[in-house]
Amino acid sequence: MSAEASAKRTKADAIRDPQAIIGRRIGQEVLSKLSELNSRYLKGVPNGWCVVMKDCDLAGLDLRGLNFSHAHFIACSFEGADLEDARFIGANLFSAKFDGANLTRTDFTQADLRGACFENAELADARLDGADLRRGVVIRADGIHSNREHSSFRNASMRGTKLAECKLLGADFEGAALSGVNLHGADLRGANFAGAELKGVELSGANLSDADFRRAIMDENTVAGGDMMRATKARTAPGPDRMMRMLEQHIIWIQTSQRQGARADFSNMDLSRVDFSRAVLASALFKGAILADANFQSAILAAADFRDAILLRANLTNADLRGADLRGASMKDARQDGMKTGEMSGLKLATKT
Image (tube, rainbow, N blue to C red; front, side, top):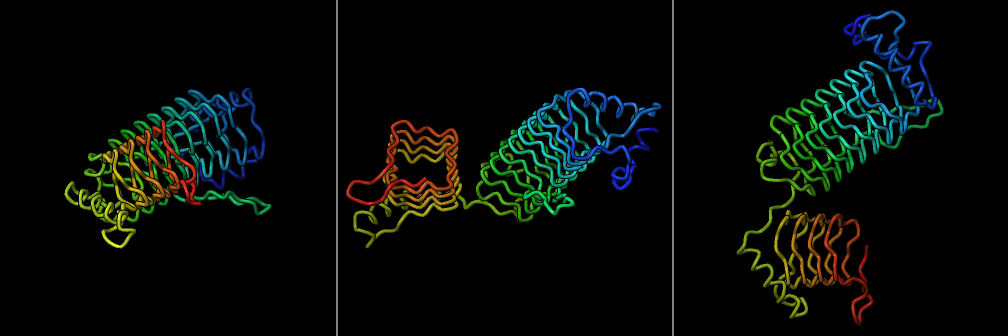
């Protein structure tokens, strides 16, 4: 059977295949034989077989360079596996798990990846052009199903990953690092980018309606290249003059015991790279703010509210954070040398994490 014919095989036909492998742990030797059978099938060579698996465990296996194009791996686990240069073109990987896997240059072009998970995976130069990554879940005969229904790239490393024209409705990119990623023409409606960092990401022609970028770190080229009008974004940082007034009013607010001036409220603002060094911002509000690469060296931040803030690579050297609320905050790669935490002198208010 030719590759073209194999691509037309329906999922229903595949599951009815009497040779289908269901609920098994697959070993390395068996995997090699299955790869050979699938390659013969793709070439139309006799005694080939389009691989069909459901709910099988392939975690930790070596799939480097193997060709499983048009094969079926429904609800299978590839967690921690090495799939470098492997091919899954047009494959059915519905609700598959690739958490922690090496997917460098793996080819998933036009694959069915609905409900697939790539959390903490390495996706450098991986190809997912035209793949379907919408919501999907497999319900087993016992009624048990995965708690994860939307495709997830949480905390994944994505450098040069190709996702052009992908269906990514509701996909989760929380905490992911996207550099040079191509999302041209992708459907990203309702996608979540909380805590994600986007550098040089191609968003031209992408549908960003209701996509959540409120806590995303984006460079200017990424923002300028996409239609962000219908996306949810962080509040714009105040200009220099307004920032100075806010800091002055905040000090007055502190000195007059909240009777005059105004409390500094930076909640949900994008304050990336802002210099707050030595600033007096005790009890200031930074809830949900983006503070990537911000400088808080020697700043007074006692009792400040940093809940759910993004402090990626922030400089907190010698900053006073006693009594501050850091619950839900991301402190990844933040400099914390000499940072003061704990209970404030004379008050029953301690740092919360």
